[in-house]
Length: 303
Image (cartoon, rainbow, N blue to C red; front, top):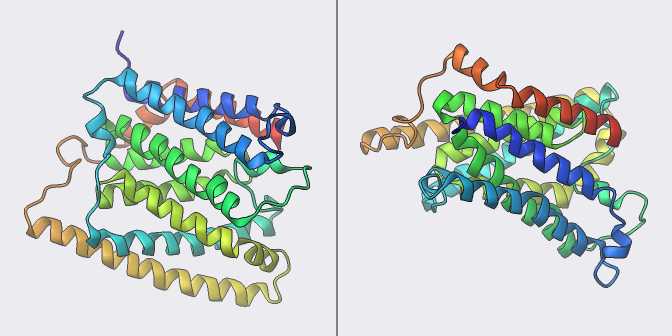
């Protein structure tokens, strides 16, 4: 029996959440290489995300691989990719500021920082870059934008971006950080379509993660004890609006160049226009609510 991508895609995320959740019960101090927990976490990232991704892609067959957009992007896309990452950074800070204000989040968080809770281990910059930025940029984008995004394209490009962003939010396994991951997913999915390459979303993810790695601690101190919340919101909001305006202008320029060059969108023939019925079909396929339930259970347990 052949299932539609909207049925199988959430199942992949369920499997990944189970694997990530199970890995949190491991004693990483016993598994660490030369007493370096980072190396153990890197192995966990590869086993829990990359292995299921590759296995699923192989199951889908050779005809699926071209749809993953494993192709280089042109150098003319480099500016918009970096601009998207910078715009996302300011949007992310604003969102976290709001979530912190209502008590939804109280610390900086990623899927992988969980393993370091209570260890007291100080991680140097190189290991942090590899563990929290490089490996996630490749593995997460390969899964969510490389494999899962094409599975929803029969329901439209907008549905594909939103559905995979929702699944990416569930992947956070945290109620407070669900909207943060969802926002990131919207940006990364849009960049993938804009540059027509999953490597573009990997680079965007890498730049965004690197900026957070360098400035995150300082930003979080400002979020927790802002001298003037109103001034901070106005300042960050202003910068975000300027960056977002520039990003939209650059997107318009790129698509204008596509049209004048006669280069039809790579999903124009495959993806129908947005349809509420198709959108609902994607989100209410039985495995999607099941993924939401697994997410809720994991968020409660690990929260």
